[in-house]
Length: 565
Image 1: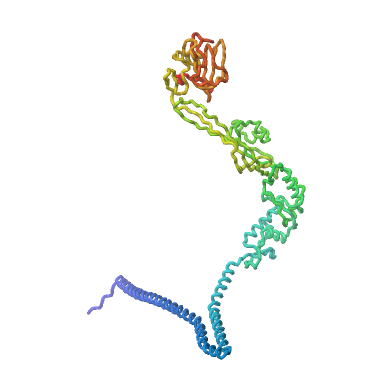
Image 2: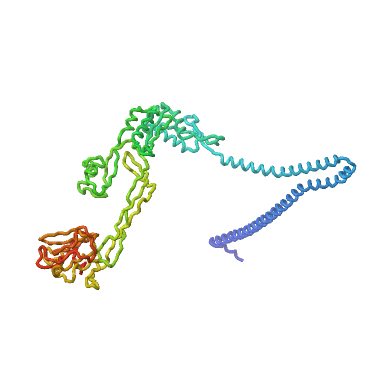
């Protein structure tokens, strides 16, 4: 037989890879099965162990309950047994006339043993519970025990604070105690040590910590009183008395004598005692000069209706040239209502606010109710009920700064007299002629034909300067009031309108009746619609007997045809 041929390199490599992969797969499969069996055994043991422990706990509780009951009941059983045993002895002793001292002693001793057993049992079970409660309270107390930081500054313990931010705030307080200097290098880096707060120990306040930091610094320090305005430091004085007296004097001068008046500074003022560097101490005279000085502030003034340059200058105390210098656009636009102007105002450095309560009366505006009706033509308005304002008593809290009102808070309003609503009849109809049963035409505008019969032969503007309509009628024909109203003018002239009457119907409407031969009414007389007020004639500039009739609304010439047809 010939020699076996060797496999090629590729075939050999594939066979080797296959064998190794096969062995690896079998190994992983076996390990997976083994791991699966181990997991099953673990959970089986865990389940079995849990059940066993549960059963054991159950048995322990049952056994504990039985032992506890037995321990509590046994002394009572023993006491009953002893009493039963001693009862015959006691009865015999009583029959013999003797006191059964021995029997009573035996029963008492048994009772004491019973009591001791009960107390011992309770003690044995109560002590662990009480100990657990005390342990819990101790742990809880330790957990809630406040901690803090001992502050060491320049190797000196200067306080006990809650957090590091307290030291940072103290550093800011120190910087505010210097008038003008860079204090960034004055504050050294502190050292903190964490510890529990001792019983009854309080944290060091930020201000006190600032005092202690300054006390350990290299600067010369003194006990003084710092003067702060809106948290800005203006210097410190060695004595606070003159400073406080000066501030109180400013407030006293600002009082107006109004009842219940409160006076205070508009800015936040503080006079704060503490430790201050010697460089921040100022002379009281210079501080007084600052307190009594004035400062220039920018204010906005809103132009109101009716304002003029001179009026604004009077209100603000500035010249018009100063106002224009701050608002150059005024040269082009002029003053416009609602316009805002920039003004420089000088006011006291220590502005004072006065607050007081005042009571005053003010009008309550009345409402206007429009009653629309088609009885009158569009554009017709007549007041049927005149409105009247009401009156109320107002209680207000008013605040002023340097005498200028800055706020007004209404505290109470009491109505003294209710306002009367004004009712206005408003026409909604288009003019149409209506002929009454008596033959006198009445227009839906509310005006009637002003005479008996006739037609308009010359209308409004029929010739230059003609401001009404002409109705030719025989002399003496009655002339009626076209609507109710009050006679406001009666003129007897030989030119123009001649003899004529004017009636005011209210709400802006008037009518004129001219060239009459006679007038039957007088000025101030009230006439109803249809009343005879005059007679047709030809007085004045007239070429024949006729009624010249006009209607005017607020002085404007209207076309009478729209009112009488």
